[in-house]
Image (cartoon, rainbow, N blue to C red; front, top):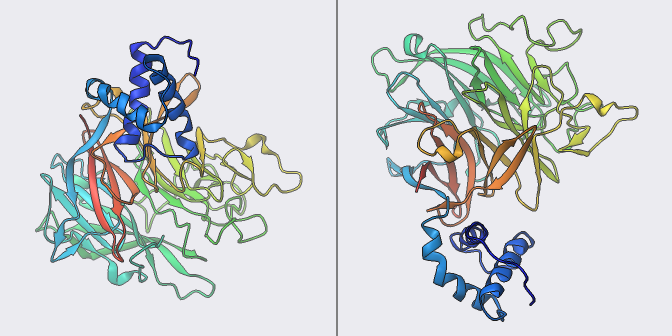
Amino acid sequence: MMVNKEYSEIDKRSIIKQYLSFVDNKEFPCIAAKAALARRNVKCMVAANMACPKDDTDIIRFLNEFVDEFRSSVDTYHSAAIIFAGPHINDEQISSPVAMAVTGDGSNRLFICEKEGRVWVVQNAKMLSQPFLDVSNQMVDVEGGYDERGLLGIALHPNFKTNRKFYVYYSAPSRTRGSDHKSVIAEYQVSAGNANTADKSTKRVLLEIEQPESNHNGGDIVFGPDGYLYICLGDGGGGGDKHGSIGNGQNFSTLLGKILRIDVNGNPFSVPKDNPFVSVKNARPEIWAYGLRNPWRISFDKVTKQLFAGDVGQNNYEEIDIIQKGGNYGWRIKEGLHDFKMPEGANKNNLIDPIHKYDHDQGISVTGGYIYRGRSIPQLTGKYVYGDYNGKMWLLSKAGNKWVNSDLVVNNKPGGNIQILSWGQDEAGELYMLINSSGNSRSEGSVYKIVKK
């Protein structure tokens, strides 16, 4: 091997960082195509410092001599602060944590949604013994393994401290012919006598949406800086947005395949007058943006107020979008940046491209994330931290008019087969990763806080 390159300390740090990402995940050496670049860089660096390595054993032997020195200086972040990991509650482990909300009242409580229908309160890094809310008896039967239905979202009213109101999104049985179930957005209030218990008698249904299939439900609900509630809805499921001649994503007469914006203070709600399609004939006025396949998690940047969405792809691509008022994000005309089902005469000029897309060599289902605005990890400030169901994590960094993607190297990551289900952000802007560790008939749920090593 001929090498005509001098390796600076920056070069070495970068290459060692690649090496550590494989060692810490017990994936090196490997033959996966995704590791090819890292392996080639490592070999070149090794060759510049020693005789031509014979195989991966030589590479690892050489790097292990230097790894301790570099490990201490490589910029990595890890999930060492465990909020809870497979806790036992009445001899049952929590399963499938899919959403998180915070109070904003200074109590630093975290509200964790379990897909199977319960909301739990975590306070002072401990989960309380009784659920805050249990709506499992109002829901469809959710399968213990993989099921896209369930209790999928929670949002606390901007005036929660005084009015004690909060909102949940869950999947309920439907009596409508042709529907698999219906999505319900309901309001509750906290019990007047116990701040850690919901008063189920205060339930008020705001919205019900019929769902033709069991999948692609979206499910996230978030209050924006304008005080309105934003609601994510998938395209109705079944694959390929097959319902209707143009699919639900491009159909203004349905709420499916959209992000909605409503005022919860109406009866049962009202539509903000500045919603983009209020005056459009035959359009649902609740629609804020459309052309989405399955926007699973959304989040507002605390500083710029931009709305970010992780939209789950079909067969080939996952995407991250910045959601704009009235924006058309292209589904089912395109998937990511690529044509999917292009109707004759379609004009793609008005479609909004994602800020980032990745293919299924890297992931299988994007889970969205947050712009980091905490204080504990200054290096992450202003970066979009996100992940995929397959357990991988990345950063998107703004560079001029573009967003640049990079790996997020995480130490102390849970072992085994993990799925990143969702993300959360606390009152201080610090981030949390909601995961499942599978292998049994019942998945074990955990919430990890991202902290600086």
